[in-house]
Image 1 (cartoon, helix red, strand yellow):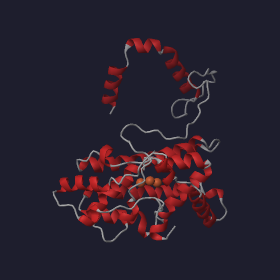
Image 2 (cartoon, protein in one colour):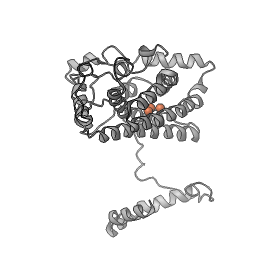
Image 3 (cartoon, protein in one colour):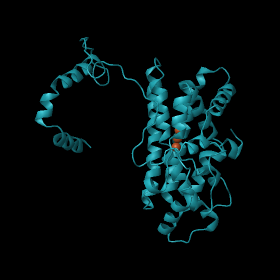
Image 4 (cartoon, protein in one colour):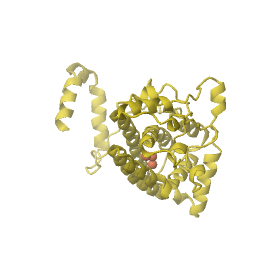
Length: 312
Ligand SMILES: [Fe+2]
Ligand SMILES: [Fe+2]
Ligand SMILES: [Fe+2]
């Protein structure tokens, strides 16, 4: 890693760039010295620092932005949970829904970033724990991406990864309300029907990568439940009220399924059959008509496990 880093630096940083940025580079050095070094163990320099890029305070923009790999970000046309928990379907096609669910987790870092950015004056440990969790969620999304790559599927063409959850939470709820929703959803993942179920489906599917990813996904959620206990639950005297508050906050979020369709933001196109066909080509099997015909949307069912398991 060190060699790689050195080579990257050598090819990116020219003499000319170094000269032009010398004031900025010495400011960075001064910042480090003022902080007592990277890990804060040296004496602090006490030197006065003059802000450069941060002179104008940063303003957080809560609206998620995605690149061209996300051509239909309002699409809520394929309900992954209803398919995943339907016993008539086999584990193999369910791995596709789980890869999709993992990839869609890119909306969790988008949402958590807003909590972190808009919650000032917490202890350092709060930001460390929340950032660790944010990174885990980003990694879950990458696992989904790798899952599709393994099947030779170009997900940017066949999987419409929406940002509606992050968008609605970021623009409709206060930071503590968003944290409440996150806590409520993650508590719901812990019973038998949540992460364990997904891991079992991965095990039964014969796709060892799916099983491995679900193992990581489950383990991380156990840690996230603890982060929630440490930093969200503490705000309440009654644990039940904390969960209930999360449920209430989630319930008041308006997912404008029909409005988005009317406004032409999306047609909620059912992209599932096409994805499934692609996967069947890779697996070398004939598509199962029952699976091919799946067409349940998110119009009436919200994307946590509440309706599916009743375990809230
Ligand atoms: Fe997650
Ligand atoms: Fe996850
Ligand atoms: Fe999580």
